[in-house]
Image 1: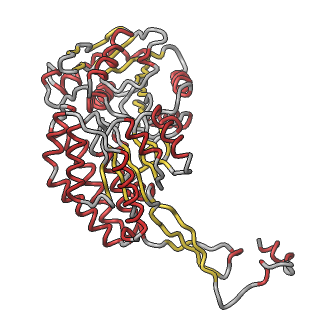
Image 2: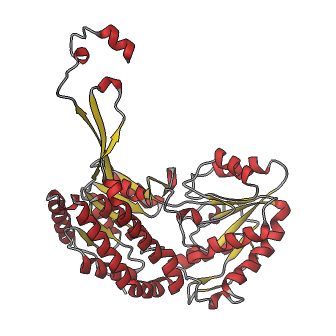
Length: 463
């Protein structure tokens, strides 16, 4: 299945209609916003099975995994917004400095306006619709651009959105990078982009022409550290889960393993055991094991298998785009597997020998771009120390992936792995502007602020 590019003329028409609709102030009413969010929630119920079927077709995701990692997260985000939107929108009274007295000060949350949301293919439902929830709650309009690499999912989303909303409010456009280029060159009040750091450069370059604010959710090589005092069986289970979820096609999947030499062999054995506990003796037959999204992705990831010694796993089947979960050791110098974001079920193992384990780990991580995630297995106090000496978008101590699940903490990148964050209230904040307002008294007008500053001495003392 291949989706046709949305024509430029249609994109221009949608953009113009959304500008006009936002200018009508219809989106400012909180009751109206809640009603739209409830419409989206009802649509998620109605279209749940078609979305799950499309995820199965495009990515070989089982219904259970589709629900847990995609559909349920969107529903939870919508419910949270419906519950709290009135509090989020309400005008906040703030302290007023003495220089402004007598007066009252407020922060007003206003929608940024017309938003563009561009999502990738790996979690094509939640990475498109979760930002949409923030845009709707904030009172923005939105143009959604799903990925062409998952055409069945993208088409179902288009049908769902078209059934529920006027395109002057929310619209879906389809197509390849030529469509992206057209979209980025349009003038928006906000661009929310999830994808690769390479394409993010194009987004920022286009946004700079109009000084458009952006949220960039990117990726990178997220380190996973296993110290000598780690619970090896627990670490192996949680790393195996985090690495094989969506066949490793997760922006926060563990990308490489830094492990104390003394526990390396034990970890390899435990990892292989845990893989079979998760996916059965024949991983290829497991209904919950996802496939690589395309032949190109399969060829790229499978090529890494020749760049080191296979410690466990290593089997693959081009006809199904299947790659077995694999630990790769003794990596060849200059290997791409240590330079490129893997986005697949291969985990290179870097053995840390000798003393000063923490110092070696910190030096290796800090020599690279800032990652989206960071994982440490071992003593919590030592984990916090390494966290304090490194940087990442987020992370876990003695787990993987789980920081993205908690909507009460922000999710986002730093440096090469992104800017800005979202989830829960922060999704609302991402599409809102904090407008500061001071309301000065009319019954008294103190003279200290006016020229020729007759009370300067007293004013200087008070300030």
